[in-house]
Length: 421
Image (cartoon, rainbow, N blue to C red; front, side, top):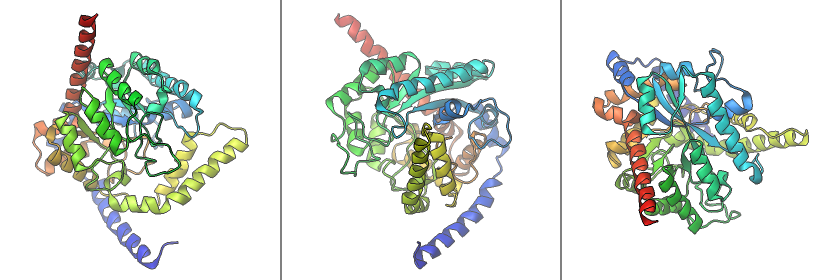
């Protein structure tokens, strides 16, 4: 139960957010902002839509007006989203460890199936040049990133297999520490065996990703894992969906020292849209309800197991969404503040967009309800005085540069191998 002072804080928070919501939902996108946005190659590095493809049979071409999802081809077109990295995420709570890779392959297949259903509107992409070609052909570029190194089951051959079938980044850990990389999600849990960052095998994984041309993603990882990855990687790294810890104290976010290190590495930090990572008040309210919310999720999963059903990630997500809906959404300003902060600390060449669409239980900043609302970010950046060319970097140019650099390092490493034989 909330204490009296907590109730007063929450009331003031709700009142403030209600006023801001009315302003954000009616935010007008100027003709200049719309033209600028539509001329850019907009790249988002994280969406959890494959879970919907596989577990709910969702068709990305759906025109259902009641669909609450944040990614569909119509929403993509409305927001001029040019390229999306679909997250290949395996839930370690509901998937046996021996099936991690199989579940990942099933998710990958679901992305390919969507492209096969809509060949006139979607193309699979594997390089920066592919994304640019899709833009020229007015098609949506579909890419993939494995979210959580546990998916490779400690097998370098599986890592190579993922690359061969199209995976172009891997997040070294998800919220769970795996056998070779510590996670920020459980770093303070004494029951979890940690490694003080990356193990020797984990460092070999990073180098093999460099050699393959797979981007090293340091979102979710523990701080020591981040510093190990930065030290060992021969190519620029990315944070596929992380924000700034100086503004919001979530351990998933990056400190200013980390932001400077990514800039020195010539990498890029893609800002996460989740309300709990961009607004301190939401983060606190989230933490206050977390125990009850998690208990409700576990009760649902246990009930399904007792009934002989396979525990479903999507059912757990629906319960989380119901709980998070009780917390007012922060204003759009909160998201733009994080973009602004990272641009100032790391530099304009090292910030981009990593929405976490379809994986944030609807807890997005006000005014951002789906990919269709992305032009509002362009408008907000113009309002803050950003130049057109810098906004294009944020919208996708920076990520394309990093992809090209990673591809170049891969070619150099593989050429070196050939010469040494």
